[in-house]
Structure formats: C-alpha cells, structure tokens
Amino acid sequence: MIMQTMLEPTERQIPTDADTLEPALRTMFVVGGLYSRANGVAWIMAGLAKALAQQNAPVDVYAADCLGRQSIGDIFEPPVNWHTAPGLWLGGLSYSPTLKTQLKRAMADTDVVHHHSVWMLPNSYACRAAHRAGKPYMFTAHGALEPWALEHSGWKKRIVERWFQRRDLEAADCIHTNSMQELQGIRAYGLRNPVAVVPNGVDLDLLDRPVDPDQLRERHPELKDKKIALFLSRLHQKKGIKHLIEAWARIHKGEPDWHLVLAGPDNGFAPQARELVTELGLEGSVTFTGNLQGDDKIMALRAAEFFALPSFSEGFSMAVLEAMACECPVMITAGCNFPEAFESGGALCVEPNVDSTEEGLRTLIAMPDAERRSMGHRARQLVLKSYTWNAVAKQMRDVYHWMSQGGTPPNTIVTD
Image (cartoon, rainbow, N blue to C red):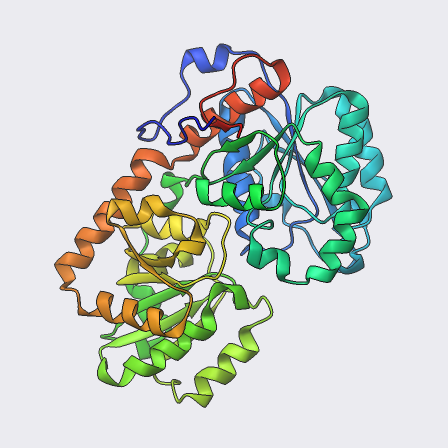
C-alpha cells in the first residue's frame, strides 16, 4: 500500500519540549568514505545528523579512512561523533579490518544502523554486525541503484553484488529513497523491502547568511555586466555537462549578454569539458570556477539568473534544493527525481540531450527578469514548505522508531 509521502508544511521549526522528552534513539551512520567537500552525500549526512541530534536522536558516524585519501569528518558538528579507522581503497571497496572491529563493538550501544553508501565493505561489515546483534538497519542508496548508475562500471558492481551487496540489501529492514521516482528504481532492481520515501533538506540559516553576489564578478572580470547561467555540481559525465556545453554553443553568439558558469570540482570529466569548450570556441562565453563551498557557493547561487543541471541521473540533488532555497529558478531533468519542483512552477523540465537542453536554455533566457524572479520565489516557497532539515529529521526519526520498536508504520512507508 502506498501511504502519504509529502512532508507537512513547516518553517524553521525548533524541537518542542515533547520532542526532547521522547526516549533517546541512538543511530549509527555508516559510509565507505567521505573525501570531498563537494560530495552531496556528505552534506546530506551532516545536515540530517545535526537535526536528528536536536531531536534526541544522537548520531555516531563511522567511515573508513583509506590510504592516500583524507576524510572530511570536521563537517559533522558536536554532539555528532565522527569515527574513522585506517584502510585500503582497493578500487572503492574501502577495506578496513580495524573499522570492522570498531563497528562490532559499537553495535551494543546502537538502536538503528543507517547506511549511506553501497558497493563498499564498511557497509557490509556493519550489516553483519547488526544482524548478529539483532539491530535493524536501512540503506539510503543516494541514487546508486538508479539504472544509469548501475550501468556505470557495471561489471565491478555485478561482482560486488554477488559477493555481499544483494544479500545485505535484501536483508535490510527498510530502504530509504527521496522520491517516488527513485522508489521505482528500487523496485526495478528487485528489492521488495519496505521503503521510506523521505526527501532531503536544507539548512536555511546557512543559506540565508549575508554574502555579496557581486564578488563573483569581481573575481571573474569576464562576468562583468553579464547575466549568469550556472551549473554547480561535480564535473562528472552523468551530470550532463557535455550536452549543456554543446547546447550553449548553439545559442551563445545570439546572446552576448549571457555567460555560462561551470562551478564544481573535477570528478573525471573536467579535462574533456575544457577541451570541448575550446573546440567549440566558447572560451569567451564559459567560465570554470573550480569548486565552490560555503559563502562562495551561496554567492554564485545568488548571482545566477538560473541554475542548470541537465543530469542523466540523480538521487535527490542537494545542489538543486540549495539553488531553489536561494530563489534561483532551476532547469533540471526527470532524472533528478524532483517532480514537485516542476509542479511548484519553480523548475523547468528538459531531457538529457542537446536539443532539449538548448530549448530549455532559450526559454529561460527569453523570460522577462520579473518572470524569472517569480519562478525563483515559487522555488523558495516549496523549500520552506517541505524541505527543511528539522522537518525531514522528524520523519526520519519516526522511521527509526518503527524499525526498532515495531507497531504501525509511519505514513512515509511504502510496502508494495
């Protein structure tokens, strides 16, 4: 049976006395490794853990710290606890016997285990430890079980699937997705577990800090007097950068007042993207800023006329949610798994190809400024209504309680 999945309307809610009087519910987050501040999963974990701690659900985060890769545990604010153990990367498996021992010992003081990665050994260690200790666990795949993601390095994933991943997923008490669209991918993969459909959230206090968007133009003089179309994400082929650049090549000569900004760290596609920009003669119309974090990211979102992410596949993009929170209209694909954005009037839907992306760019560029601002306002209102971390954490805490105590499932659970 499909039950209600939308969050109740909320503003920046503060936990009530009733919340704080509920019994503590200690949760363990497990992830194979966190090494980049541009990793959306890292900030999702940090935002959720912070909000859960405020609702008497303290979180301990466990990760492998593999040779040659420095982890970013400092993004987790007290009282959230960060635990790492040394390991070997081994092509992404994150082999760490020391972490395996830590997880076994910590399981006695844990009520629920929440996995934030797949295909990695630390998660399998925790699954085995939870099973032996009789503790429930859930997986958030963060888009890793979407069809596009499954095909990427598919042969490796099929080996790991047979080794441990299929077994661990099928034994999970719950799978967490951010949208009904992502749920369809879970079912297509063959998993019949109960699924919690709970979206990600944003920290409005962080995004609403005062910053000067004009500083972006001061740092990049070529942006002076230009209107900005912004891509802000990892430079990875699945993000649709190639067809975004090719679509921009079709329109840039007719739109001299506009400039495309590609912001984000290299995740394997930056050299090809730069080569394509040069090949298409776009050096004067496209700027690469590199990775932007903190105030620099907010500055770029506020400077932009609109945000573009014509991605092949996303779990639930934090970049999209943050752009909308900053009143920036967004151009995204159905693969971003955010139909509510289109329904709100704060987003334009395109297909992940050159022709559709070109059409979307032309539509947004042709809009009067007031219409784009109105579109951005509608995007912000949707975030205020349904996508703050405090509201998300309350629903997730209800899921944890059901997993550990049983009873009637919360209204975010889908069982068919």
